[in-house]
Image (tube, rainbow, N blue to C red; front, side):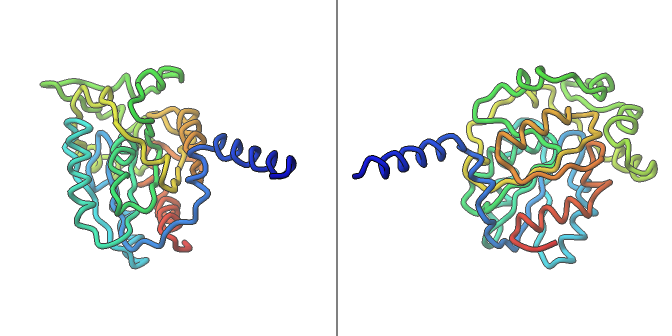
Length: 256
């Protein structure tokens, strides 16, 4: 091999190594007819209602997982059961804590792409609590209360910090169906990070008072995700359902 060609080959190899998981975000999405939506903490599947309507209108088959929120393993199992019922390539979407779930469950061969909505996105085995501690604590944390080993949000914190840009009546409906989380849920660790190998999209909420927006930006950049930023509270899937649905459509290989 000529010296110049050898140098070019080495340089190309180093470039590939340096980009790492970012390359996953550069891969064109496989066309998918299915979407599985995974809700986060202090929520249930109904939080996706407006997004579901938009995706169904676009002709997609949509299923919302109902997480028990008792452990990462339990929530991943619930998600896998739904994924196993899909017929063909599937976009897997996680909001908030559910980013942890889709990072673990996203290795399922039916998953063609991942979408994170103001979501956690831990690496395999990562101490996400320690990572989060590098950023300022968000005010929603002051509004939690524990009962019988489960944590929920008080009404004031839910309305003011969790759903601050959601109309009051809608926010109250969501508060009424919030699902408490096991107090150990956030300390559970994953064993895999599917965003290393699956094309990924991320929606940052720039007005988020639940997960620090700078942490969201870091996570999106680390995974090499195709990223949008919305002037939204933590519940962008409610207050900006069109933009979130459009992002999912893009991840499904369709034009919004």
